[in-house]
Length: 408
Image (cartoon, rainbow, N blue to C red; front, side, top):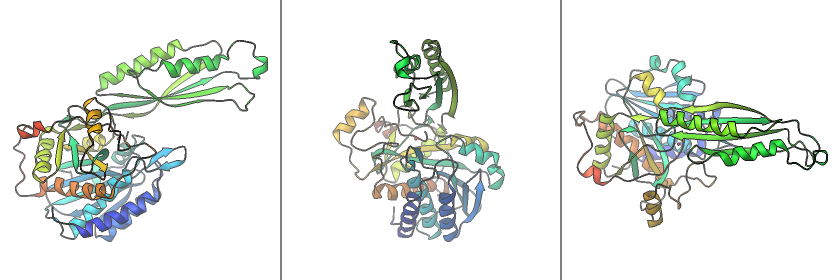
């Protein structure tokens, strides 16, 4: 594509401002204000307060109506909130794309909707925007598009028709016991410690992953009276997730110890995202024709996202893809080997890692991805006649690493 200096400058400003104010799900006050301010500055029509701190920016008029989704929230951590999932990158790229279009740096027709969604990390933001009547606030999209950063080379895009992200659920388990003085407990091990250990070590990878485990008393010389364990459950489809949920239940049945009470709750849940086959085929070919390294994923990512709720509310076809955060366009041999074995690359820190960061090349690449995707629908040459991905596209098939939203 031709250079987009105006779009890139705005994207860089957006990223700098958003990265400086990471806010957890449901608290995106500053982030939404930054996005609204920048979008108004480039001449977009802006609606704020949608589903909490959600923002919608609109440019152009008429058909087609192409909608893009980006997220506003940061990852909640023990340090407060940190941009460790790339949502600031996603939002900045989308603001930059709007600026490029308004400046005439890329051809387009119709209406472009930029949906900046809150609370993706908790899986509640899309539903909140739907409850706020987003489908009545904007024209029905011809297609809904969304991208997510991933530990891949910056110029790679990876997606597939059909299921593209996983179903997931976060199980929060609380254990309680009387506690007391360790010198008065006798020679047996404290019952709460036994139950806690059985639970942590009883969760096999075939069930899920223990992401948080806390056991501690009120003082160094006091037996704990409570413990908490968080288990992340993920599966490629709803039936498989249900099976994992039941398997966790069997583990909990086996950890019981006299004097220990146990409670369980699901605190976060995501349905799998599924790409429209025809729209995915069109976008795949468009990316390949415009010079992107397009990778066809062999199966859904282990990550999760709630953007499917927006697509369902609009009754619009959805395409969701991943692109790389690495500053290099080449993938080391060690990472190729890791991918072939079904593991994430090791040379580029993955999303949610405390070492995660996005390269400057990735921001520009993400911006251009959006403009290329828009051209698939706004160009007069666009057609919906393609019904499948075939031929050379198959040769590029390769596994891709998992990322989150969200549980990307």
